[in-house]
Image 1 (tube, rainbow, N blue to C red):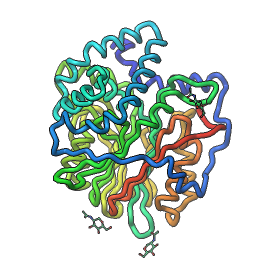
Image 2: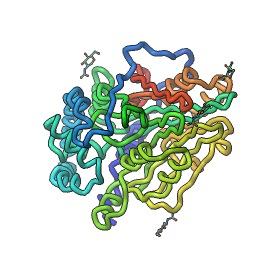
Image 3: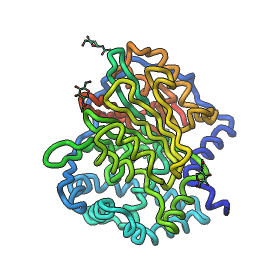
Image 4: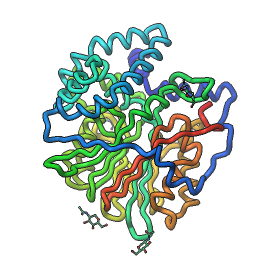
Length: 394
Ligand SMILES: *[C@@H]1O[C@H](CO)[C@@H](O)[C@H](O)[C@H]1NC(C)=O
Ligand SMILES: *[C@@H]1O[C@H](CO)[C@@H](O)[C@H](O)[C@H]1NC(C)=O
Ligand SMILES: *[C@@H]1O[C@H](CO)[C@@H](O)[C@H](O)[C@H]1NC(C)=O
Ligand SMILES: *[C@@H]1O[C@H](CO)[C@@H](O)[C@H](O)[C@H]1NC(C)=O
């Protein structure tokens, strides 16, 4: 295999972190466990929109896309500028993606094809770019997901979504441009059929896949990026050549729309070939029903790590296999575990978990939001997150 083929975009994240470290930088603070951060000011609460699944695909996103058009454009413009700044073959890669965009959208499964066309129509953004926009969330989502059970057996599922692309450092504000641009695009969505909620999710407006979602009374799901050399381009090329493989975001979306139970959701998430590896963090509505599914691109080799093996009352996943150590410069797992142990099972609930996810370095400069779900009440809430200095990275 050629180096450029093996080299996945997501390795940029690891390279950037290693670069930072080799320059002698390390987090400018000790890991912390904060308390009393909940609730944050109401200005940080994310607004909800209804997506009507009874409408044709092209019509479903009209209101969201119209309202968030500028935000989506800003994100794409920033991404494009960043790719071009790389020079060399980066510009050609972008050119290729742009060129292939319309062809790729033609082979996407429905309803995604129509939904992406609809978003392109409303925003006036080229279809190739909307397609790219829908792909890059699959590649750069660096995160922390936690499922915890309180002493009554109630399950809570929460996550931080960090956008793992070191893009556009702003030395004056000491922020990452892409993270700043992503926050205003965050929306809560209530997907309805016949006027009734099928599931709820947190999305960056314009993205039609699922990274964080709840099927009320049934199950909750989050996806974390898994970095391996087996991901990215190889899967895409394989899809083009053999037609085998599903975009992660489409699989999670189909799971949210179709699965009627934790069991069915688990079956869908473990039996479909994907384009890139991933971690699925899945929890049900019954005590003990919580696991981390470590997926390869292929269906074989799937690992399911249950809450009872993980620690009894909670299971936690960042972006590393649970059986191996995290990358030493990106260890959010050890600090998060430390805060969970300090919280204890007695402290489990929305405020306690929010505190864990608000503790540096679990909270970091790439964190865009914290979402909190309680399945038995069908509850989902999302808060924008900021990490004031001193905060990693940089
Ligand atoms: C467990 O349930 C009892 C009775 O409903 C309630 O008082 C208590 O607060 C609950 N504990 C937790 C940790 O939610
Ligand atoms: C920097 O921060 C200020 C104050 O919060 C804000 O008005 C300004 O837009 C920021 N600049 C950039 C480039 O984000
Ligand atoms: C989910 O659990 C709650 C109790 O925790 C129960 O009342 C409810 O019926 C369950 N929902 C479903 C769909 O089983
Ligand atoms: C999965 O199956 C393929 C072909 O059937 C094989 O090449 C690959 O090594 C297997 N992977 C694992 C992790 O078992």
